[in-house]
Length: 119
Picture 1 (cartoon, rainbow, N blue to C red):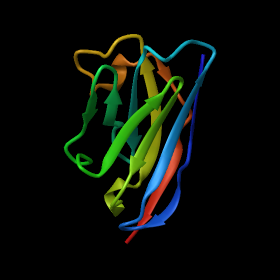
Picture 2: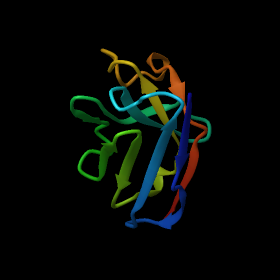
Picture 3: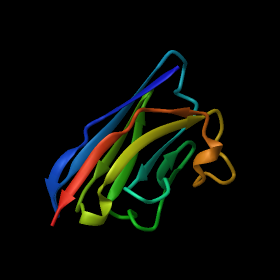
Picture 4: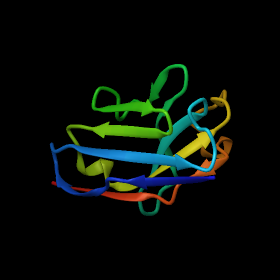
């Protein structure tokens, strides 16, 4: 089971990026999938999740959109801010955890992709 995240980069504030998480080795089409991020010196934090519905952290609501196409998860990030700078990780679980914002509740993790937003 592997999750491969891609699409990160260096952009300016106000720009957009699209992150993609590709799953292989298992049928992930029915899994709960999520994005987390971790900035230097900070804990990993929830960004967004998708299962039967979509879920967002307040800090990204209205700017980020999560979607899925079978085994591929996409995070469209618009109106990026410097505080969005972090390594972004995709994660998977067989079911959406009750505490879906907690990283410890996800079984599968990708390697991370760096997003840097300059002011």
